[in-house]
Image (cartoon, rainbow, N blue to C red; front, side, top):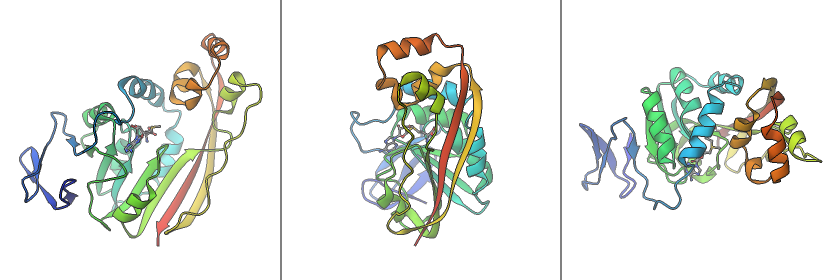
Length: 255
Ligand SMILES: C[S@@+](CC[C@H](N)C(=O)[O-])C[C@H]1O[C@@H](n2cnc3c(N)ncnc32)[C@H](O)[C@@H]1O
């Protein structure tokens, strides 16, 4: 059940629109997503170029082992929200293992792409800090490489609800960093404490895979904007190398 972002009343589907009792109306787009963002355009998530770069990289399925690892944690009884779902690479796969699936992102371009490629999920243009769900109504939230928005996730999860967070492991993209920097640093592990949540499990999973198009990989990372021109040029000439993909997957339970 969805909540009106303007007045917090119930949104009811009437044909291709969702309406509340105050007649606030949100129309489904042609491809089937709902824009419930009240934000102005300035803060609008990833742009089309970033979405294209991420899509072409993700579709090579280097990250599929992590996607399957998370998918196996979901249950057929779950109502799932993928918060900051991007173009739905994970959401589409997760939707096969749950009862109801929602994907949400601030980027209209990402949601347009997601809604065109996945008809099992209802996608929203919305902020993960203000989600169109009632309190205590969701069984599971996934946060994959996104800002966390812990308070809002706590609000929408049912008591005992699951929150699965994925971020980079210490040696994620290590060989790429070795190419770019003289002294590469390992990523720090995230905190083991989240107020209001109990940690159920934490896994560090990794795979070393040959990547030919290392430039597409770079485009996915923050290093794209933090690297000298010289190092970028060197990378552009590379014919590929083995890269470690390492993820920290943490499962939290709402107390
Ligand atoms: C690194 S991408 C990860 C996307 C996806 N989870 C994935 O791993 O493919 C981060 C995403 O968070 C979205 N984002 C950033 N701030 C957001 C916010 N406040 N609310 C919703 N989405 C947000 C961006 O638009 C982008 O799609």
